[in-house]
Length: 275
Image (cartoon, rainbow, N blue to C red; front, side, top):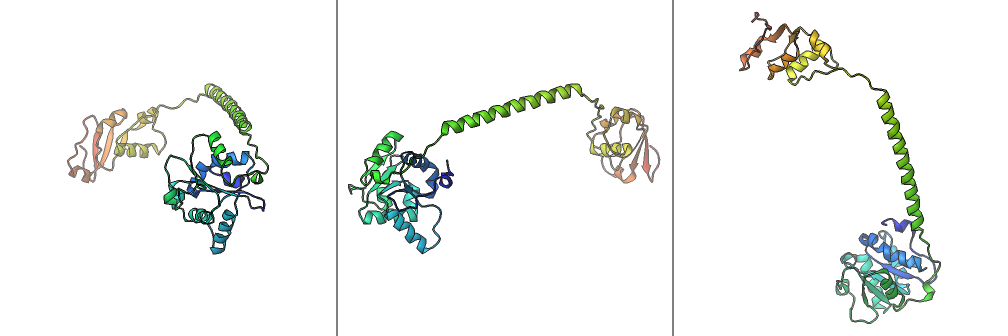
């Protein structure tokens, strides 16, 4: 759930709270931790977005430093994130409680700048929600004072809503499909048989003779004369025009290596004589 920040903004009140420190690129992975904290009623503050100026940087350090406990989601991104690192190291400087959560079994406390030997900066490797909750609850600095109103997540209800919605959509699609099939079965227009001419030169000439439109068998039977702009590559397409009697060609088209068609056609050259 990458958009959880909009639904659960950081706590900005004056009551005791917990600081959840993480890199912005890890916000999707941190959701399971945030969700657990909210379900237990923890008031949680975290950095949201990019700082605008020096005053905002100071405000964030004050908010992070004012937390009863810092829970750090320690990844390579967090160790490289300047703002996260600055806030956490300020808390270390003043010996404030810090709990490091390790997502993959890699101890990054040194790369973060933390002293891994300090007792109040323990490292916990994430395994399951129950163990993680136990580690946070028993961390130095955690107390009932940071607990407020638990957040209820009705995930089952949301799933039921989606299931019902998909069921309705499935029924509508089925009805539309059934109606469409019945309509197509009832309304079957007779489509004319189209003559497929592949050679572009002959195709262009036939379309000119037919004045556009679909070249049907009936139309092909009515063509007795073709005027070609050049020699085609596929003379065999003329077999699709059984009534053809005369072909007109430009005289310069015979200057190449192309051959004239074989058949009972009168060949008329523009500016020349019949062949």
